[in-house]
Length: 101
View 1 (cartoon, rainbow, N blue to C red):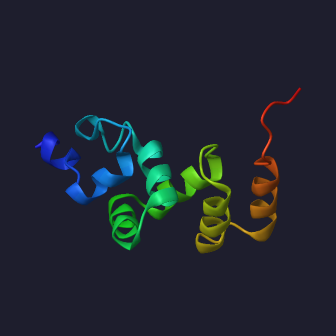
View 2: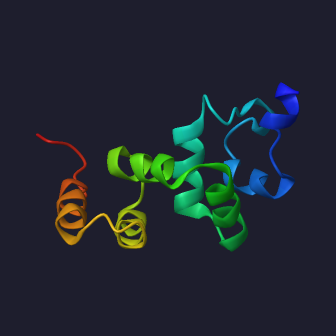
């Protein structure tokens, strides 16, 4: 029963090219899965994401992620109605700095 619950559709494998897809766990790897699909997902992937995780879970990842691309922060900040002030602050934090020396 647990294995079936944790089974992923085959079309998602393309988003996890650098990961052993068979070892992904929906709960343990929730943040990673959400980040990856928000950054790289197409319509099918995004639809699966919103059917699998709640809006609150997805929003929490967007609010706390340090891995999302700037374009994803901007886009999902608008879609999830996180506010202009939050988006500007989040994007400002993500300046393209290599090192802080």
